[in-house]
Image (cartoon, rainbow, N blue to C red; front, side, top):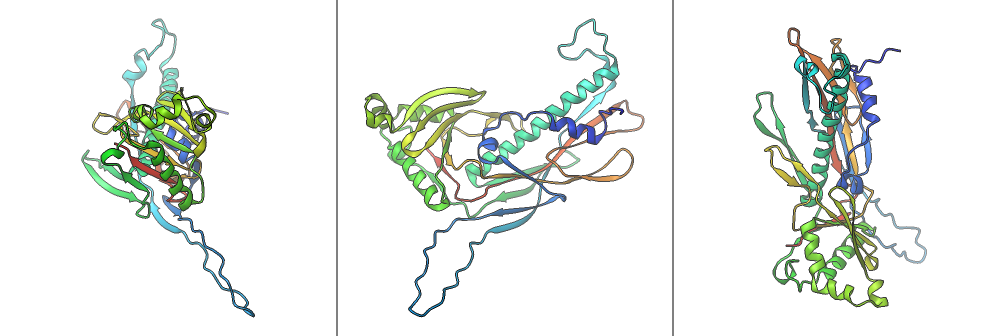
Length: 351
């Protein structure tokens, strides 16, 4: 069977065989995925309730109670679509790491470049989804800025969850930059709030490297760690260990069943400025494993002149303009990040 690297289905299979880069927000809080056959996605989320059973009088039969509802929104998933051209000059020049005395043909080099471009474009889409996840957990919303064909930036939409209320900005002596702040007491309050409202115990917390330096320098935390006795050992254990680039497992608080990570993952924004997914000063606690990445279908005009719709995370497209010695590769994705429960996490502006 002929292998055609320029075929959409072939490129889709190639993408499925690649591994995504490490993304802490997506991997921890939004690991589930769901694809839709249309560009519209259904967003379901809910708030937990803890009702108590009603009494009935003697001789009574029952009391009808309403089911716990959930909010549903039909949303047109915004499309990200980075592209990259491949010109004849790219094929004639030696590629990165290639032997000076190479025997590769331009056709062979084209296949290698195409595979690398697919990976680069896919990683750009994943970084955008990681940004969406981090913005949602930091602020309860993310703004989608779209580029028109004329290159002008226009605001397309803002995805927001107005029901999310578990956020707090510290002030006074509560800020973590104050060594006397009761940081452990704040963590207990966050844990109790999430547990009461969502019905699940939070098990993961994230702060930037700079934020966690204030955590370890806190007087109350240090006093709990400095005296080696049975009570302190059962409270928490701090042993920072790098687990992957930009991610450090900071420790474990046994009393709260809470894994703590320092996260300094970065990205380059639309203005070319390096930004952190988790800015300094923020601390997020949440329930892992319940959020979902939703993907709408992508409809596109193929090289044979027919429109086709593809259901998946990232959909490649390749086209050329007659008379130009160039081909352009695009990788489109219609993504929405959504939680299972709006009370699954708590965001603290620590300082």
